[in-house]
Image (cartoon, rainbow, N blue to C red; front, side, top):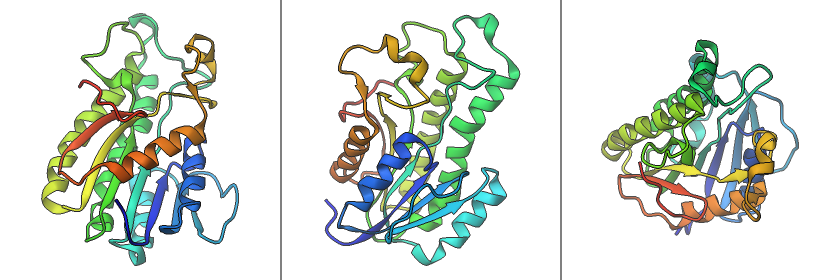
Length: 242
């Protein structure tokens, strides 16, 4: 458990869960400063909140990390909330014929490449003596062993690739940032624009408000130990098969 004051970092902060995490961390008396990073401008202001707008190419992301050097070694919670499922011209594939290069590239960039770039760039910023939990938003459908329905080719593969990369990151972080714990986190189906087209198929009681998911993740980050391993967990803290 965290006992001393520290800071929190929310990347991809403009989405529903990112906003809820910001509020959760602002209400946590142990956290002195919340840094939010998004492509869009700040949606609100708070004395504890520092908001940074950026593009998600590597050079822009590097400038963000460089600009946070004063906070080096002080982060206890880092949430990488990036991810897309659908857009105006793309929707999860039901059949292999619906796959396209453009869709796969867009989804892999948002769901796999951007989180991986953050993990690459953040290592020096989070390494130190403060216990730091870093959570990336994965998904249950990223599980190869739990795939019984098929479909959703691009989204499934992008999250499976993220899990694989995070496993590899966890090995190097265990050597070079021993205070850091990595978490691949499945939030469930959240009441947000991202999941809105699928609300009709969600079982009763399984459509979660963003604040609930933020509470689950924050509590999970408090409870997990620094063990040099990647944990693949859902909102209830239950392991998901790889």
